[in-house]
Image (cartoon, rainbow, N blue to C red; front, side):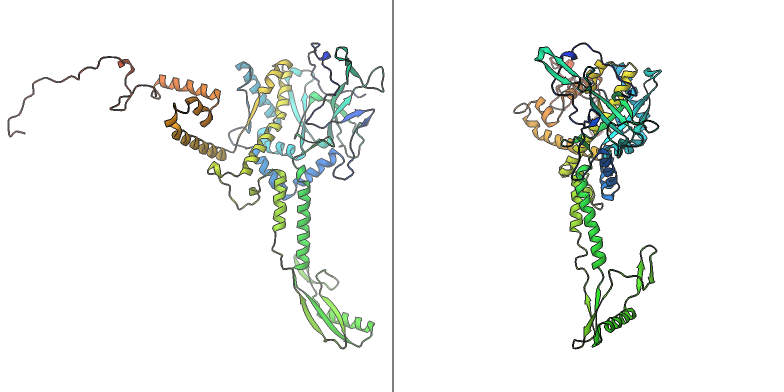
Length: 549
């Protein structure tokens, strides 16, 4: 039994797991599982020939990505998911809801920056996300210094998915090598379950044509790597029948093949039907068959088109030995016919129709989840009113959001390893804070800004229309929650800011009494005081004599 390479975290055993037993083995609902038993894989055989292994599947995905239409759709998805800004990082960590001290949050942010630095994510984010999107999975080996593991991850090395696979192995019983190790709890009615161990197999030469579970010796030997030493993130799309992880490109395999066949058939049809071909009826009289054929060849060689177009060099040359599928027809005609005659076969009449090509192009984009409107390069994208945004764009935005959340697992796993190795958090603490960690991606600034402005304008207009009814049919809290869409945290924070700004004199107090005559707010200190008669200047004034004004 080869030893595992790499490191492995030991969980604290408090005795509670010994009493937690299920007859169903531990499983990953959203991942493929390769169960090893007696030296053989329980792997499938695809009779239909779609794919026989993950190696063939990944190879097909990469070939699909080279097609111009598929490449354009992939670029639309990647550009929407990752926005490379000159000043901002494509992704930042959000610890707003993490139940931890400010010092711990600062340490987590610092380690997250280290992770991005090891990945060179700010510079290679587009390439990393594209590899994950096309292959449907991504692997990284977390390299550490075994003499100083507390220093954390030293290097992150990318692993080709064609050279590694995730293995789940049923442990063997020490007393009975032919049977699995069983965990039993008598208090639960003799409930038992096989014990599962997980690891990775790495083959530097790839896995094509090799039997699963086999090991070699020498330079090309298969290495077993512990689960904790590998970061593995997949697309989340799984073929349940064959227990295989799929890529986002899998649904487009049939659509792409159909598009290729239609395009190839269109080219052949246009080459064969575009020119007009002539039919020469040659009068051979009463000549015998051999003489007639010889006479027909002489006439054909004399008058037929001898110019040939060379596609390699772009030259038009004379080559009598070159025969083409576009040759004219030469037919003999016996005595008694209409004599020598030349007629013309018309070329194809519908060479300009591309409706079938456009249909399969749209079908390909629909299979990839990209809006059909992005297929037409000449059509602009509306950045105006939010009500004019297509429903396909909204669905596409939600799809990109789900894809981002799935891809964020790469940061989550690496951050976990980094924090545990440096003893910043324990395994129990990580289980508490991990579910509250979020990752914020930079959005397309122009689109998001215009969208938010339009939504805010619509909400303010609705608020203005409902203002006369506040206090009669609507409460202020209802308006803030349902019209302005303010959350509890936002309401509390906004109220604090308003009180502070009123106290500092930045904004006037909206609840202060107002002078009905001037509309200006009254001094609160004068409330309840007796109004005083305005002072009148009783000082004598010299009145000028008549005629001096």
